[in-house]
Length: 189
Image (cartoon, rainbow, N blue to C red; front, side, top):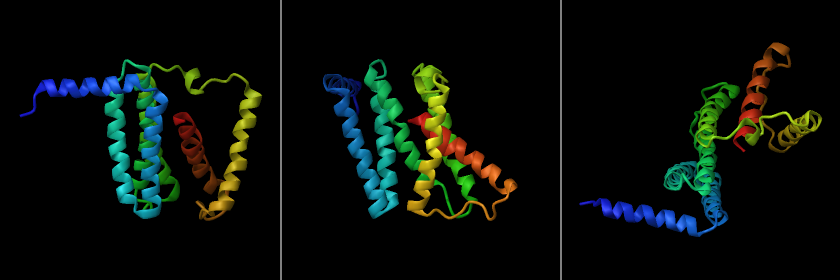
């Protein structure tokens, strides 16, 4: 039979371990675990990679909950968004949908989760980069996304998302990509 005293002992040992060790070490351990899941998913098989990401996600949420009143708890809660990205991107059936529709399915739950994490941590818009402070510099940095996007396309050779270069064909996919890979990913990171 499971006793509540053993649960309290386990809880206390996790909190003590986390508070005694620097948050950098704890974050580094999670980084290694996430990297292992990525390597397994990319080089071996996506299914075990997804399973490992799910385990890491639950561990991060539990670890964050046990330390929610400590700064490390806040860091762990925000770090939980990383495995969510991979779980969502691997879980969406890519074949049956139009290419830009998959971005909506992947990034909409991630955007909602990110918003909930920011609200839970009482973060202000300026603390997550949603403030215009130096518009010229921010615009210049934003335009580098176009350059990096072209470079990424040249390296990875993605298939075209539209059948022809007509404004009516380009507007919706361009808006979806801007809001998902552009805005949501930057908001998360």
